[in-house]
Length: 257
Image (cartoon, rainbow, N blue to C red):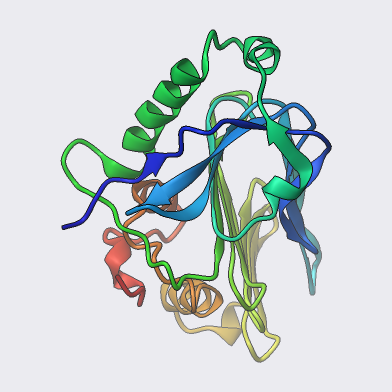
């Protein structure tokens, strides 16, 4: 029987800054003094939840035939953050003391764990649906919120592909394709190196593509190959909805359960 994801009871704190997710175009950084616990799926460690000083950055700028598109996004994180994937947090951490807990506004370990339990239900399990992650999944998945309460989703595939959503910003980087959606417009590059840009100056490269919708779908799907286990993450589905040329059913992507 499937079990809910649960937090470990052992609370740790980081002793130095640590990039829990690191990519040549992005990072999620836990600063010294971050409180964290392992996330367990049927007793197996599948990731970590953390609260405390942390930040993220993504270089979502794409070079196109008409110049740079997209933007670099840097922000601070606030509240409970989730990371699913392998990590080496124990190498830069120690057991949390009462002083560590109080510095983040918690009277006890039980209070912190209870806060994380509530956040897990909201982020993963929903009201009735139970979530089980693929333990063979080798992607790194970050799900959190910035200091303005805006959701941040950052996924790094085993092949170093990258998916980033933050408000209306979307950036998907695959091995030989890219999709960028930002306030500067939409930029798509396919495996043949052809560009389609929809910006303030109009549409450039439309002759390269007969239909915008299919190329977006194809580019995103190609970039997200290998990211198994994401289909059950409700926050990932919410992040996908509302994209330009969005999909009514995220199950249209070829993700395995």
